[in-house]
Length: 183
Image (cartoon, rainbow, N blue to C red; front, side, top):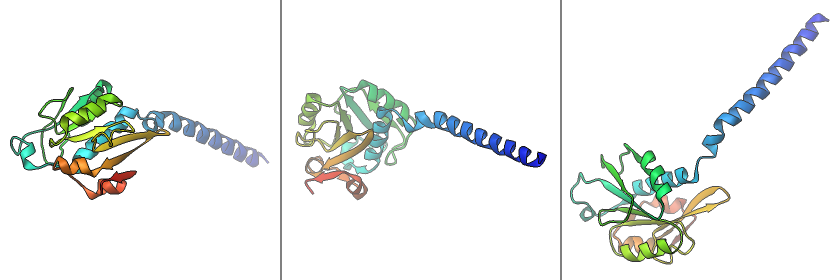
């Protein structure tokens, strides 16, 4: 009789331990699962750069860094800077980011709204991968538009301005995109 009570106590302790462990696991991983939106967007931007090929004329030399500029998105720029430190993109050892749009930018990330549309007009025809965050961004000449829906991030692509900028987007990007215009 005593052995069955001992067994039940052990089972109860095991259940309580498992429940406590599960609770700790949920609490410990919550920040990972609930990564900031800017962190997720930064990861997407890094991958967009990895899967884009620029013409050689876009860089001053083969060792020139890939430069990412942010317009109207300072918080995203800060998160991106932290995430991208020490990363190698397309064989370029140094990876720089700029807080604003300038002629050295290879990737420009624009804030939502009229800012993004104005930036699209300014870089039209340059060798710049233009990433935005607005529903009308692709129609304004953007190349990639980030979409946040229900806590998930996806993207859409407009190939016409990519071709005009002499940028080659890897077919993997086209496959993963929610939609592709100008195919």
